[in-house]
Every structure is written in C-alpha cells, then in structure tokens.
Amino acid sequence: VSLATAREKFDIAKVQVKNGIDPLAEREHARIERQRTPLVADFVDEYITRHAQKHNRGWKEIERALKSEIVLRWGKRKITDIRRRDLVVILDEIADRGAPVMANRLLAYTRKMFSYAVKRDVLEVNPFMGMDRPQPENSRERALSADEINTLWWNLDKAKMSHNVRGAMRLIIATGQRPGEVTG
Image (cartoon, rainbow, N blue to C red):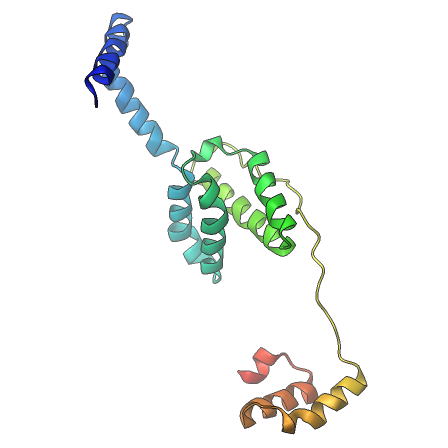
C-alpha cells in the first residue's frame, strides 16, 4: 500500500470512529458477509461436490457446462448479485451459436444450482424459477425404410468393422432393441 493510500484509509477510519462506527467491526462484518454470500465460482464448486456428485450420474457434464459457461462469465460475482437477465443473455448467446439444446440444459443446471442455494440459505429466492426454455427441442427420430434396412443387412459383410460389431448390428436390426441393450 502506498503512503498516500494508507493516509486516505486512515482518514476514512478516523471519520468512522468519530461517527461512532468501529472500522474493525465493519471489516469483520464484511468478512462474515462474504462467507454468507459466496462468489459464483466458489458456489459452483460447493454445488458439484456436495450435491451433484451424489445425486446425478452425469455430474461431470453439469460441472463442465457450469464452469465453461457460468463461471467463465459470473465467477467473480456474488451469487446474490445474479439476476434473471444475466442468464437470459448467456442463453441467447448459446442459442445464437447454434446450440439450442445446450441452452436448455444450461438453464436446467443453473436453475437446479440456484434452488440448491435457496435450500442452503444462501439466497432467499431462485431468480430462474418459472423461466421458460429458451429454445424448443426437436427430437431427432428417424426410422429406416424397409429398403434401407434390406440394403444395410446385405452390405454389412462388406463394411470395415469387426465381426462382433457386424453381429451386434444384425441383432439390433433383427430384434429392434437399443444398441446399448444389445452390446450389454
């Protein structure tokens, strides 16, 4: 701290003491308040370790999404300073770059994390409750026609894949089961 800054801080403290305010008590109060209202980056870590890892099998994806999108932008902000508009801006950016499903997932992850913050008494209310999905999700369902199935069946022998994979593909086609069930 430079001498000029130290004098300035001393003058401020002197005025506070003159007005009946204890500067050390104010500093302690500010420290306690910082613990009470953590930074977003710190709370994301707490949420992942205390909640997501225990309740979500896909917690690594949640962690990746929150850290790459939320912590990157809000990491040094207090969690109590985050407003609905802050998330709307991020979700619009994600949707505009051609990732509407990611925008919807990020809304869900963030909403869940802020609900956890309410349960932990970090926030009074979740600013994202009642928010609609930013983008509609279209399922990518496509069924093969009978001719396509026939072509696939007879060309599997020419495909560059192992014998086991060819057998699994034929079993999937014959039974109509999901690939995960067949390979399992």
